Length: 217
Image 1 (cartoon, rainbow, N blue to C red):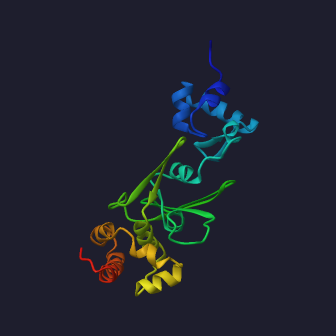
Image 2 (spheres, rainbow, N blue to C red):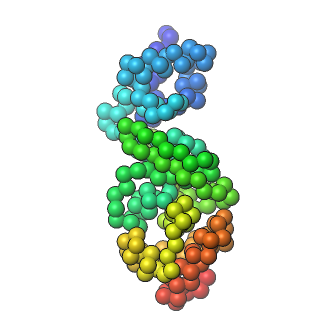
Image 3 (tube, one colour):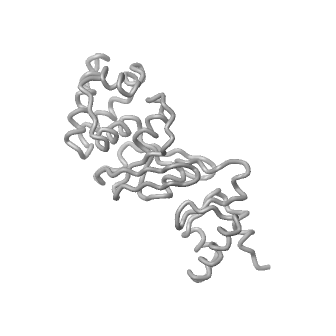
């Protein structure tokens, strides 16, 4: 029995689907596939986030896709960083209403009905240094570790702070959170982050933390 497009969508394991996914399951010409997708969007069965990325409407009755998963799909390669990653890890107290990512490509911004997705340029060198994989039943999100997110913050927004106290007061980061952080990874960033300016300021934080903790790296 020939399967219907509705059947394929109903059984799709994720609540979003891409053009590559559709090509794999439909086995139709490009024009025929686009015609099916266009009708599905018009009927409300597919909700378009951008060309080539769609949410399956019937799958959203229980839960919407996690924005971090969608962010990684919207613009590749990319990873959640900056304010969104700092908030995710509990380093800053503010709720973040724009989903912020970094990319080695040109910066972009997408306005969708799920919110604003912002992608800021950082150098391609060591791009995946300090990435955390968040796994869910529907997919994987790539999220920067806290110090990597802060390094990207300093690079993208050209910010720096002369001391830990200034950093903590400006971003309202809890001091104990900073002091308990992974200083071995911070030391790696001090050597490998592609911006000399950022490495310089990270080294100041590392030296101060090591002095307070009475440790050497």
